[in-house]
Length: 134
View 1: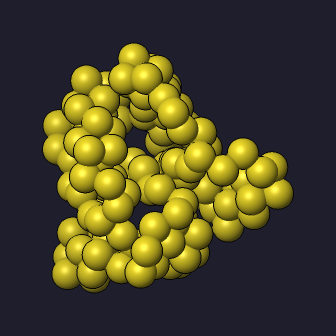
View 2: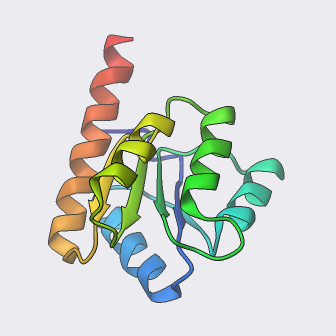
């Protein structure tokens, strides 16, 4: 499994969504989950020394600093950590834009707890495989 000593970072303007994602990450084996309500808050967290994660999950549409802006910032400081863009937008051009900016995975809302857990577990296992072969 991934380095579970590292926290995951969940960024979403909806506190309930952050909680649901955090629980799914815990069930997938992540020991600690840090939360931010928008991209700016997440950026401040990173810049204040809290910036190494096993996984980042970020909502696309948020006030202040949206997910796409945060993704660009994050890939400037970390090019390896798996990054999940979470959205209800189904437009493929937006997905392609996020992929081109460095999103490694896309989750389209709504998702069930069981689906989230399984998908997070799969992403963490894939990250493990990459780190072992590197």
